[in-house]
Image (cartoon, rainbow, N blue to C red; front, side, top):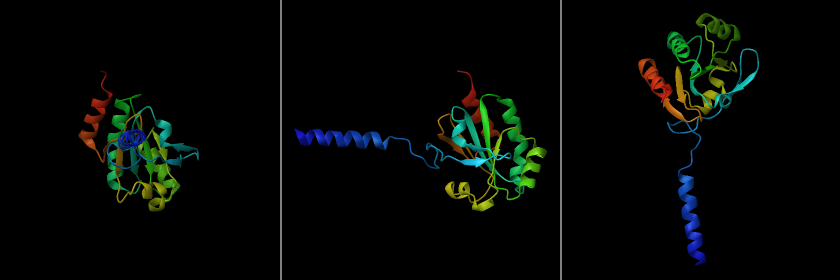
Length: 164
């Protein structure tokens, strides 16, 4: 009887732990947290935005495709107020370039950077090999999609924010 109890306990624990959410970079994983300073030096964690649909956007002022995408992100941000947030992570190494790009692109959302370029822990933890890179996460920090842009991004945001 004792062996049966231990066997059942082991099976239940194995089953429940195999269904637990894990931190990682795949769709369905809980995204690893980021803790970086904003332009004023205040550290803002990605996890502080939990409760909202968030696009984590890794970009840099020197990245042509990144800069080209920003006006479209601004339109989405304005189209879905209070339903969609952006957490921008700059891979710039020079603060004036980063601040200048933010002003020129009129980015009203949270922007952070450690100004370490490719040596940033975010690059290492997220295994970034190129930018732009983004991940759309739900209110619990679960990755819903990665590297989604343009119409596909807008369609997904529209579907996720639709009043039900």
